[in-house]
Length: 310
Ligand SMILES: Cc1cc2nc3c(=O)[nH]c(=O)nc-3n(C[C@H](O)[C@H](O)[C@H](O)COP(=O)(O)OP(=O)(O)OC[C@H]3O[C@@H](n4cnc5c(N)ncnc54)[C@H](O)[C@@H]3O)c2cc1C
Image (cartoon, rainbow, N blue to C red):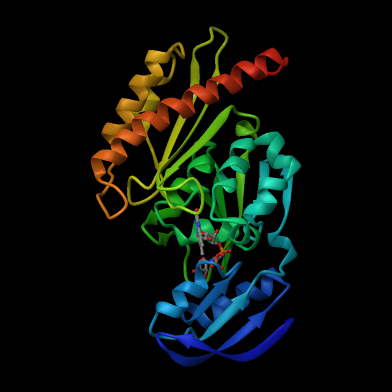
């Protein structure tokens, strides 16, 4: 253990105390979680957690700071794919040569998160675990068939990211589990993909809608394995599977992209709130899906021109 202190801060309008532990060891972080269960909270970058604590009524029993756990900060290519540790920050995603080479759409998505300060502190793991429907990391990862790696009392387990998200602010994590990493499978590395976000401002705005699309081209130039993922228009990041089925095997003509956008707009489930109406969000989905697909197709053509697989 690196540090253990008794700490006070303003929680729910009054000063409350809790224990704070900083560790450098993943095993120890898991052990502490097992020991303290639901009374413990994980601290990564703290950009969401500190705001949550200030507005909650009860102090946690223990804060476990994992920001110095090196094992959670890796970005590495393995035979399984590209593994990105949960403690990798949005700024590190933007700067990573490996991420830029294998899945540049992820770096583009990271660039849209908050401002410099938020991107310097906020982590991929924190973004995914918070599980708000408007999160900006989710759509690209889902469009690349990414998997979540979890560690807990009974070892590690893995699942598609689509199964990790259970609902607004709900994930598959058990009380004794940490999100350790995300793996973009080897088969998705280099897959042409694109991410777009629409907010009320160009910067420092949560997404009204975000969308990511990925696709391969087959030998006839038709769309193969299309993926369309949407954020902020359903309780979790969702795949527009009807639009994907429509596109698979078709020539990537402009009218096919428009039709896929319309289908995605029909299958999403947006709500109306103070930021936008459901109808406006559906219109945005139609436009963003058409554009992300068109850009993913442009990437595929560029790959072909550069001598890569389609
Ligand atoms: C000003 C501002 C602007 C923002 N703009 C955006 C934006 O544009 N787009 C966007 O998507 N988000 C945005 N956010 C939200 C936030 O910054 C991100 O979600 C960030 O990635 C959270 O990461 P963190 O490391 O700070 O998480 P923390 O705040 O440390 O943790 C968040 C939650 O996840 C849990 N947790 C963290 N890591 C793990 C782990 N490895 N295993 C298990 N549980 C874990 C914590 O216990 C906590 O419940 C913004 C936040 C702020 C304050």
